[in-house]
Image (cartoon, rainbow, N blue to C red; front, top):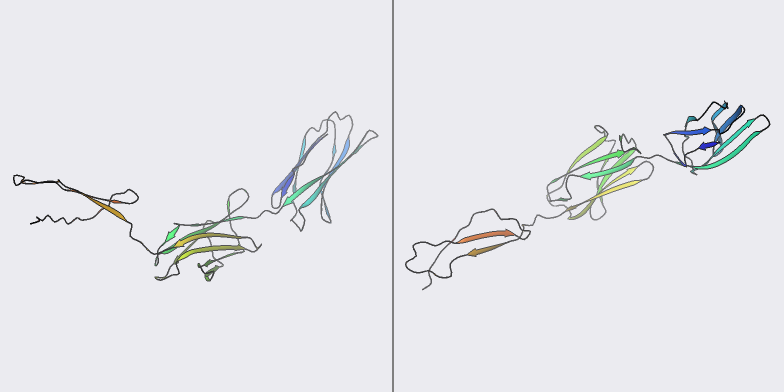
Length: 242
């Protein structure tokens, strides 16, 4: 016979077991039981004939308890020639959503608004409504400066806007999301003062002029340290040394 059993089962997901007898010459009674903790759940109990072929059975996976270890017990009896027994261990995992936090940018200036979203995905990476969730904002000194509870979501995505003060504590802030199970997810962003970018100015002019020159060309070029040109106005004065 062939008994196909998943090595890992997940709560809130359907389970399936498949059974096929090979070279069966008589009718047998087959039974498969899920043993988890003190509870035994019959997955299927069926009479199978030589023409039954491959049979698959769906079942509901029980909620996870303190231990993730369970057992699948199989037995088959028929006449005087068939008497089979087998037990396999399986793991039952608790299916929990995965929470992600995303901000609209990594660095903010004082007075700007921090816009972020919180989304929970199930095992199949589909957005789900996470009911027992709260999140808070922590400043660089570890102080909880704001928190959100009972926030409603649109299309299972929570979107929040938080305005920074004009004189916030500079440094790394954290958005911390906590679930009822105790799992936490955090996302960091930086708050820093605005600093004018540095740039270099080069002036290209003739090394010498004569009284016969009625005009000459001067080139002024401003370039930021990261290579991009500087846009602005140039005031150029030409004077003669005596």
